[in-house]
Length: 166
Image (cartoon, rainbow, N blue to C red; front, top):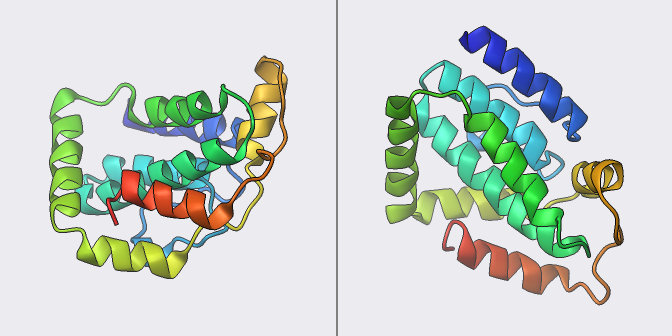
């Protein structure tokens, strides 16, 4: 069952723009060129291995990058793509596993000094959010442009304050 879910999620991530799907890695192995689809693939791998510490860090990073990317794309459907990735990554998981992940995320963000340092070292995304634009172009209408007047630094600081509370 877990192998089947992992395969389905890998295929979905590939369809949603995973260019370099990660395995179960620490944040030290994530780069600014990894998009949320790549990172959520790593989360799935960590959940399969019951490595909730790495899973929590990857969940936080993927969500942070997704929040930032949703601000970049001038389309109201952009946040839904990130929610879809998160949903696929976690669907079919037993409640006990989801509770363990949630507990690790809470612990990680309660004393967030270390995770914030790692995230700041990685930096803001260095890729075009094609996983969003490709999904929107295939499934809806509207603008697929970067938000006019987009202020990268301001959006990054706002995203950092919202997700890992850095």
